[in-house]
Image (tube, rainbow, N blue to C red; front, side, top):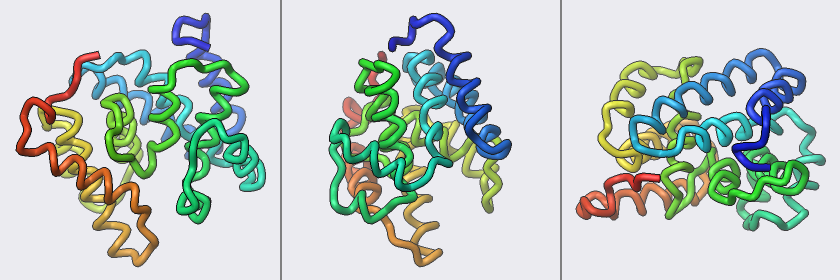
Length: 206
């Protein structure tokens, strides 16, 4: 499957509409819309951003046993820590499903989908767009979301925006006393290390 596959976007929207709850579907379509906006703003291929957005939660409401089956195919490398966070499995499962059953060949899209919840060090700008969009899409209603959305969307690069989101996620998870995946901490540290390197902080143009 490629972005140029006829009707791929309508096929995935129909798949989401038939397998996701109304609330989850609203979220996916919100991520789709804001991903397109962010991709255009930061010079990233909007078609790839739209495809990643439509895929990212396509497996969100599947049974855990089914999700684990996708992980066990070994197409996307997962760690022992990943296996201890079943609430994150849907991203990897969606990426594996897209590669194995839809024929997705673009690993940039697959990696973006796989790690959209936690982020990962060295994440591509496409992946960062999805990471950011998933957090600030229009149906999100957490405290101070409007201020957060305005600040993130004002950033000059997607890496600066992703650092804002990563820091906010880390603080929120710590406040809630939940287990924080080390990959999010590692990504925040990676992004922070780029702050004093303007040539690295600037988003790549795809």
